[in-house]
Structures are given as structure tokens and as C-alpha cells.
Amino acid sequence: MSEEEKNNSVEENETAENIEGKDGAVFVSEDMPESSESEAEAAVEVGSEETSESSSDLKGEESSSEEPDKEETPSEPETKPSKPLPKHKKYQRKRKAGILPEKEYLPDFPFDFKTVLLFLFAISMIVFIWSLIFHPSMRIENITINGNYEFSDEEILDALNIHVGDHVLKPTLFNARALEESTPYIDDIDVRLDFPSAIVINVVERHRLAYIKVPDGYAVIDQEGMILDFSTFADADVHPVLCGLDLDSVVIGQRTDITDSLKFRKMILVLGAVLDAERGSIRDDGYNFYDSVQEIRVVASGLIFLTVELPDGTELQVKLDGVENIDENMQWLLYAIRADAFEGLPAGSLDMTEEEKIYRAYSS
Figure 1 (tube, rainbow, N blue to C red):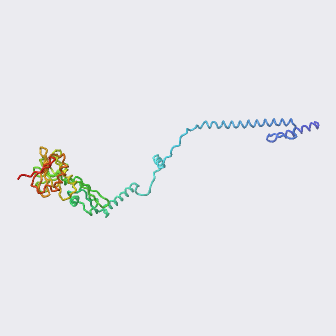
Figure 2: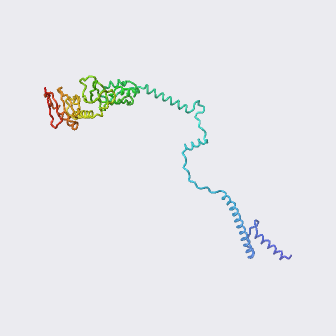
């Protein structure tokens, strides 16, 4: 080989070393000719294309490896968040499900929890009862009685067996019911405690309206037809007497059927008019119009005869046509009596059946 050929081979080796490095990278030498430079650029483009293809192949493999994972996990349906339960309800549910164990209070204590509670309750009840029985403030200090007219306060207290200084729990309904049954004058009685040391007794009495003539004497009757009492003799207190009613026998404490009688209703209207006239009078001279009425009689013709005691002790018989104008007639009669219109006149009767009132003396 000639020297020229040796030199050309050495230059070619140096050019190859300049183009390829250790890792296959391509380097361009400044001394490289133009043809070799174009070849090197082509080699670089080829290497970059191979690198991009290899990277795209790797991405494809990764994406293909991830896609089966996405397909394996199905998407769960969207649910609205539920409202959280209170703590005590969660605790109860866990207790029912057996998740939480039963709590134990003082495991070494000889009694269970319920027994201790019952014992404490019994002790508290004993203390409460002891305070009710023996405490000084549980004694009666004041007694008030309302609504009694026929009976005095002492009579009612003796009948109920209640006195100042007794225990406040002593008054019972048994004594009140016994008093109602013992006398027909008591319609109702209520005994109540005005805490801490007072007793209030409310009495509803039946009031005496009149007397009814019966074969054996005179029966005391109220407005509802209840027989309250009985009197054998006609003393000074037996008035007013309702005469002309057909009543053969009576029983104390029972009602009669005379309340349905027309005569009885007329007599009640007359007595009511007498009471209204006395209440409406402004003069108070001690004369009691109602207590002065001695007798009321209704005859078959419908006429009403009223016997009244005058202030001087004499009796006046009043004749009434009916009950149509009974209120005005009783007001006029009371006015005439208090004006002494009949004073000094001989015993006689007053006819009020006409508009003009006529007084007639009894013939001697």
C-alpha cells in the first residue's frame, strides 16, 4: 500500500470516530466535509424517529395496561349523603346489634342498680310521710265556713269532727258525706285544705220555703219539693202554711210530686213576689214581710187567699185574682203596710181582684 492510501484510511477512521460516540450519539466535526455532514444529519433524524417510535410504543403499552383496570372497576351510582344519626340513637343501635358490651356499674357491689334505686325511693317516701305526720306546720290553725244559715259554725264543726289543732289530713270526705246523709238541710258540703294549715268548708244548704198541711201535722218543704222536717203542732214558727194541697203522707229526705201541681206553682210564685218586694224596699223598720205571711190557700175557682200579720199583731186576709200581676200587687201591699194604711181598722179583708183595692171589715 502506498502512502497516499494509508493517509486516506487514517482520515476515514477519524471521521467515523467523530460521527459515532460511545452511546451511539452522532457528533459532527468541524473538519467533516459537506457530504459527510448531510449523512450525519440523516442519521440523527433516523435515530430521533426510532426514539419517538419506541416512546410511543411504551406509552401505548402503558395505556393498554391501564385500560383493563378501568374496565374492571365499575362506577358506583351517586348517592346523596344521609343525615347523621344522633349519638344516643347510634349507641342504642350498636347495643341492640351486640356491638357494644353491657355497661357494668360497680361490678363488686352486692346489689344491682334497680335494687339500689328502689331502696332510695323507699327511704325518701318514709321521710316524706314522717314530715307530713309530725311536722308542726301540718296542724290546723284556721277554719273558714261559708254558706251556712240553718246551722251554726260550731254545729258543722262538731258534725265533721274538725277542730283547731287537729292534723290537716284528718278532714276526710267520709265525714262530709255522712253529714249530708244525716240531715236533708245539707245539699252539698266540700272540705278542702288551704295549704299549709287552714281548712275551708263550703256548705250548700236547702232553705225552708214553707210548711204543708198533712194529716199528721206540718211538713217543711223547699222549692224543689224536698221534705226537710216535720212538725206535729202548729206553733208560732210554723208559717207560711201552704193549704189545699193533696198530700197524704211524707218522708223526710225525699221529694214529693206536688211540684207538678198547678196550685203549688201558684203558691211558689206568690212567695217569690213577697221576697222580691221585700228586697226591693229601701225602708228598714224591722218588719219582715216574708215572715209575716201566715197562710196561702188556692181554691178551685183559681182565687188565691193570703193571710198576713200586720205590725200591730192583727191579721189581714188578702184576696187575689191570680198571679198575672203578682209582683205589682205585693209591692203595693208592702208599701201600704209600712205606711200604716191599716192601722186602727177593725179586723177585715182586702180585695185586690180589681184595679181599685177594697177593704172590708168582718161583721161582728
